[in-house]
Amino acid sequence: MELLKKCLDSVVNSSIKSLEIIVVDDGSTVDIRAQISDDIKYYRLDIQSGPAAARNLGASKAKGDILIFLDSDIVVEPDTISKIINRFVKNPEIAAVFGSYDSEPDCEQFLSQYKNLMHHFVHQNSSSDANTFWAGCGAIRKSVFEDLGGFDVNKYTSPSIEDIELGYRLKKKGYSIYLDKDIQVKHLKSWNFVNWLKVEITKRAIPWSQLIVETGNFHSDLNLKISDRISALVVWLFILGLLITILAIFTEGMSLTFGILPVLVILFIAYILLNFRFYKFLYVKKGFIFAVKSIPFHFMYYMYSSLSFVYIWIRVKLNI
Image (cartoon, rainbow, N blue to C red; front, side):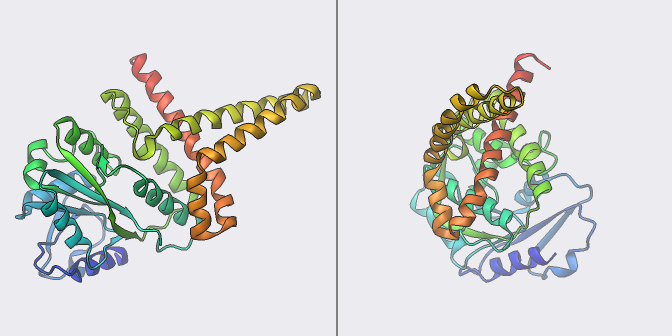
C-alpha cells in the first residue's frame, strides 16, 4: 500500500498536470480504493489475473492516444512523463518507448541493489533501437496496442514476461520500439534470496527461453548479447573444471588437479574480462566489496539462464 501511494504521488506531482491516471486493482485482498484520490480512476478485477489482464483493462478505459504503463513499485521523476510524450512527438515513427531503473535504488539491502543496478546497466548499455518492451515504465500508442490485441492474457496469468512477448509481436509486425536511456525511474522493491531466485527462474528465465525457442528470435540485445552467451559457456566450462578438480582430489589424482588449475584461472579471468564493464560500473557506484560480492550472483544468473534455455530447448525438440 505504501509503495502504491509513493508511486501515485510521484505521478500526481509530474510537471504535466493534465494526466488521466488509472489504477487497476488485480484482485487484491487489501482495500486500496480508500487510499486513492477521487480524481484517479479506479477499476478492480474480481479474480487475480496478472499484470497482463490488469493492464489490458486499464488500457481499454483510457481515453488518451498514448498509454503509459507503470508498475506500482515505481517512482517517476517530475519530468518522466513529459520525456515520454516528447519522445513520441520527436519521433512520430516509433510505436513504443521504455526506459530503465535509475542507478540509485531505494532499498539498501545488497541483493535489491544488485538486481536494480544490473537492470539499469543492461538497459543503459543496449541499443536504443529495441527488440522488446518493458512495462515497468513503458508507453505505447493506443492504436498500436489495440492492433496487437494488448498483452497476452491467456499465456500470462501471473507476473512474467508479458511485456517482452508484446515487444516481440511489435517487432514482428514491423513497429519501432525505442529504448530512451534518459527515462529513468526509481524502483522501490525489496528482494530476498529465495524470492529473487524463484522469480528469476520461473517467471523470467524459463518463460523467456520458451518465447525465444518458439519464435526463433535470438536477437543480440539486452540480456541476450553475444558476450552474455559466451559468458554462460565460460561459466559452465569453469564449473566442469572445478568438478573435475574436486573429483581428482578425492581420487588422489593430484597431477590432473595441477593440470586443470591453470585452466580454471584462465577461465575465471576470461569471465571477468567479458563482464568487466559491468563490474567496473558496480565498483564505481558501490565500491570494490560490493562488486566482488556481486560475482557469485552474476555467476548464478548465467547458470540458471542457460540451464533454463537448454531445458526448454530439449522439451520443445522432444515435444515433451
